[in-house]
Image 1 (tube, rainbow, N blue to C red):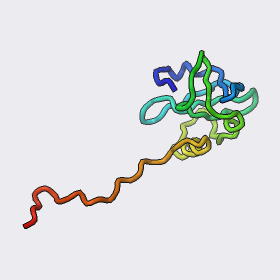
Image 2 (cartoon, helix red, strand yellow; image 1 turned 45 degrees about the vertical axis):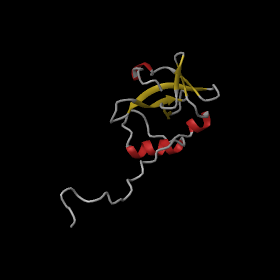
Image 3 (cartoon, helix red, strand yellow; image 1 turned 45 degrees about the horizontal axis):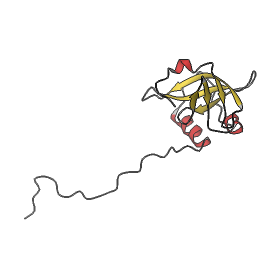
Image 4 (cartoon, helix red, strand yellow; image 1 turned 90 degrees about the horizontal axis):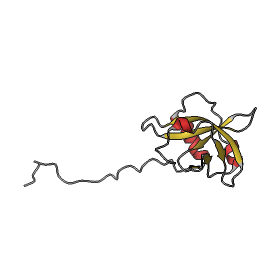
Length: 123
């Protein structure tokens, strides 16, 4: 996703799935708590239906429309957390898992002996 785009400019834009089928309209944009970068879009999928969350990272803004690299059925089956509320880290993990995106934490540092402490000379 282009990070120089004002997230407020995404609201109201049409969204399309990987095959070019219309998903709906961007209703809200959620920013990453730590970086402030747009991370999720809530897409209104129909007049009386709910909003579906889609990740913005693999998505693209092309000629004023949001193109999401997932199938419409997968998007419509995304977990429903309601809009207008903060997404918890657990909810974000559920969404990442739903879309098959890598959410693995970095591996722990190996347990190694890094040598002697400075000043602890052995005889």
